[in-house]
Length: 332
Ligand code: ATP
Ligand code: MG
Image (cartoon, rainbow, N blue to C red; front, top):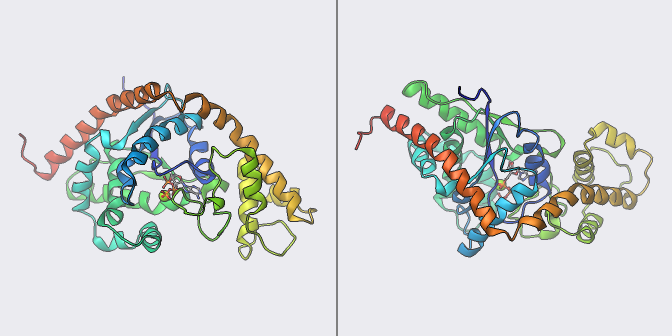
């Protein structure tokens, strides 16, 4: 009997330590779905090289990312964790999908615009990245793709390409749906709250990493940009304070309305900031404890991704065989 469970697939680039946005917008929600779905969590190292990387850092960062996934609650006994470059089907499918993707659609992607504005040398891989991401998703016929808000457009492209392939050839791919959850979906930088918190941000003071010590978290929150007002509420004109309130609510699991009510009588930001910092520290404590316990156990981490590759390889093979047959590639 085949499994009736719906398929979830998602991943985080091994481009640096995970931050609070990755945690609240992504990993924290992922561990809640482990038992209800067939879950594939992969490490998109091929996406990572769309921005130049130091090879040794990428190699170490990939294994480190496995440790961070597990520390964030992705129990490898209840889900599959694997590395993108171990499965050749991702790039094979990306080529086929790329031949169905209008160039204009790629130029319109927000993330391409953001990242190309931030980097001096822009390579075609950065433009092509969403096609590879569509291949990641469609290769395993994922039903749902949990992500932060910044990836919505990319999942929509994957859906468009699935429809296009199905319409051009015949019914092949499941149409994926993004799963984007509430308050944590868009955590902003503490230093420039009009931009999202990012691993690739060069100002580390704007970013809380999941491994930051309590002292560091208190310092970063205390020096977060706010404004000269004194009321604590969601106001688009005051993105710094809105971001801190959003973080507090996501970290403690309360609604924004309840958060505004809780802090209604506060008259200084300092007191509020202390509570935000303590909420983050409490949230990250179990993650940090688990991370410390496994991060240096390379044999264990390798065994997790080895097992993951063995689980997904046959699925990828079957999809590629079907796709190649449908597009008219001759068998060997
Ligand atoms: P990079 O700067 O290298 O792109 P990143 O911080 O954007 O790194 P990704 O690996 O691209 O992280 O994204 C991993 C997951 O985290 C995705 O699901 C993404 O939507 C989510 N995510 C990233 N940044 C944030 C954020 N600031 N708030 C909420 N979710 C986020
Ligand atoms: Mg990103």
